[in-house]
Amino acid sequence: MDEPPTAVWYEIRIRGLLGATLLGAFPGLHARAYGTETVLTGALPDQAALYGVLDQIEALGLELIELRRTPR
Image 1 (cartoon, rainbow, N blue to C red):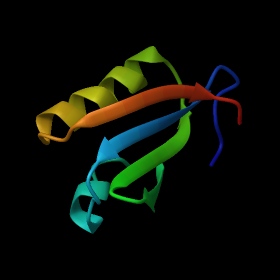
Image 2 (image 1 turned 120 degrees about the horizontal axis):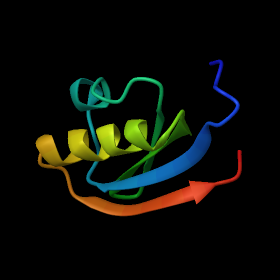
Image 3 (image 1 turned 180 degrees about the vertical axis):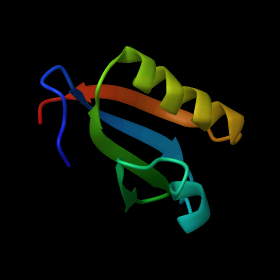
Image 4 (image 1 turned 60 degrees about the vertical axis):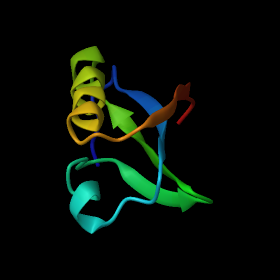
């Protein structure tokens, strides 16, 4: 995936294991199960995109556990 030079990498932890349908709400992010959590990782081009992901988490009624900026 090509990312803008200003893109920032994030790790987003969500309580529960998300199925394929819910994961489809987060295109461009990679998902992996970690115990009883789902961890989404990937680059977001700007703060507006980050807020969009957070809004999607809230709209789907998911529980955000942790949001962290990570090195690539």
